[in-house]
Length: 412
Image (cartoon, rainbow, N blue to C red):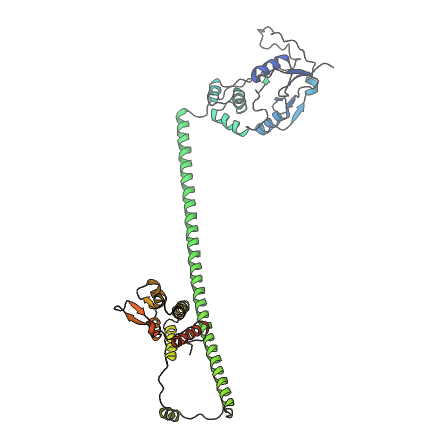
């Protein structure tokens, strides 16, 4: 079967004649062609009679013009292809000569505005794209052609030269505006775009300001709620501390009552009747006045000194406990190493000593009860070797141990 078309081996395009193949080779630099039994598609628009040689071209025509009906004339136009180069027909003087009406219409590159074509080429658009854009935009303007290229950039045949029947002539469209009018219109468009941008910026700034105000209000509300919660937490903590102190006093009172009952039992005395009336205060004072007043022992003085220290600094339990532990270390070092002078001499201006013991009311007094004395103008606390009394130091250690480990020490 004779071939109906020439097929480009590089891009697959179907061409109707050797002449078209030559033009295709000049435009694309493709050089591989072969006969094909596949006929060149010929879709004719029923509205404007424009021929389309591919489905893509017909889709683009529909998109641009809205014409959607096409007649498939492929079978009628299909003829065996001749591999000989066509001879140029002599020109006829009669423009109305229709001797070749039975032959298929010859397709040629459409005529476009040369000036606009050159401008597009200066913009680095290939001649194929520039020609196609000017043809399908009606040679309206360079701007219209550029817009068409942007819209149709992804078309598969964007780089193919458009072909139209040879007798189709497109008159270059006259510009709608004079240069002065076009310049004025451009200025109006720029001014409109500038105002639109300013309005958009103002609107964005207002939205940002509203967002900043909203976030500020939320932060203030969150801070207020946090402060309220902190106050409630502190109040609940103080209430719990007071309740714990009350329970501790109650436990101590019960313990004292139990100890008193146990002593009465050991002495063989009857249990005390809670309902029995207690002696009046004057009688008690009279009995007490009749008893000899016993001076406080060194141990009791130490205990009272530690109680005062804890009471004076009751809001800082950690600091009080650290002072007790430091005093316990001083006393322990003297007991273990009584002959070492460095353990029996303390510089009062020492920063560590001041932080732990010296700055707390009652700390230095306790050491003086243990036998330490101020020397050298009050710069040092010193315990002489001959005044080291293990009994007093052991009592001091016991009181300090009780103060450290007994949670109820100094409560009553």
